[in-house]
Amino acid sequence: MAPTRGILDTSVTQSADAAIPAARESGSSPETATPAANGRAARRFSYDIAIVGLGYVGLPTALAFHAAGHRVLGVDVDPSRVEDIRSGAADLGSHDLRRLAAALSSHTFSMAASADRLAEAATVIICVPTPVTEDRAPDLTAIRGACDTVVRTAVAGQTLILTSTTYVGSTRELLGQPLVERGLHPGRDLFVAFSPERIDPGNERHSHEDVPRVVGGLTGTCTERAAMALAGYVRELHVVSSAECAEFTKLHENTFRAVNIAYVNEMSVAARALNLDITEVIGAAATKPFGFMPFTPGPGVGGHCIPCDPHYLLWQLRAADYRLPLIEQAMTAIEERPLQVVERIRGALAEADKTLAGADVLIVGVAYKPDVQDVRESSALVIIETLLAAGAHVRYVDPYVPRLALRDGTVLYSVDNPADGHTDLVLLHTHHSDSTLDWLPQTSLLLNATYRHITTAPHQSLV
Image (cartoon, rainbow, N blue to C red):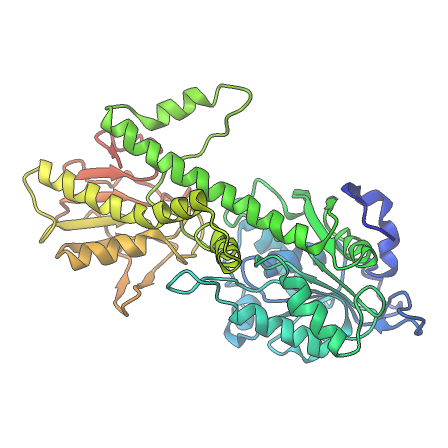
């Protein structure tokens, strides 16, 4: 069956219950039956879903499937990660923490640090990190390892879905071709597709079920089976013509954000040069009901997506002798943004007849975004390292990050009483929603890199 373009209403895919049925009541059959593949007898599976990688994407996805009534197996090669989840210590929002508590007390949710049981699941979803190296080339270690494992353990009748953001053609190259070499043909013996993750850590305004999923398979039948699987928890699916289209969709989404963030950061510099408040300007522009989308400047871009994903596109196109100068310039600007913040700190101190060398600087918040523990690619790392190299004395406070390891091996610890001791300048880098700032010293210089007004700090200055 050829893939159907456009929105796929999950109400017409409830036949997916044949492949991923709701969890059965106690006392009924403990296994899941999937339709026959290539004329073989239908296979019985013990799990409806197996999630490979229980990080910021995999664990919430596993919990969403389980909350929808499916039997879920979570696999992560890091035993300490599995133990953290079992102890309830995972970095999750309150909604997912409640789901985790329910899952841990259920016989329909299991976890393992070994991939030996993947063959017991009707659908296997790969959710592993896709970072970049120090020279901004894709680091494919985790995704290649996960795909190799899934190919090695794959059995007829399974549906395999890659969700990790990566280069166009990766699903076909890392899953489809190796499966054929094993004698398992996608679309005939089993089913392979790509469906990019769309999770915003720390943001509970959008439930996992309400965020539409894009899906495209290696064949039309692959697309259909993957859509059936994902319809097991998500309310809306958008089916595209191929896995490659779905892969490019994710790269387009995050590259769009990267370019616009670089742009608004540059506009904040222009506004300050003209003695204007960029937040007021953005608010005014956002009243236009068409043709404008508000982005907010900040101290830099961190996390697992925006600083990394566009480099997968640039890397692939560069290898084919294509250049994307606008995107290249935007990514360079994103990398340079934390250094601009340091120069703003230097300038603010100079205006107060102080030098950066020997200055006491307090960083408020070091996570890459509010309400998460994640410091991957956080601009705070570059800012702190650069300040220390310039001879500044740096402290930080972040209740979400009690310990911070810098890239050179230096380890810092969040201070318990940030108001104690002398502080020449405070940089508000990340403001967690449950953190109070009424302790901020009124006598210190305050640079607000969040671009949000802080009522307890009337003398703040925007970066």
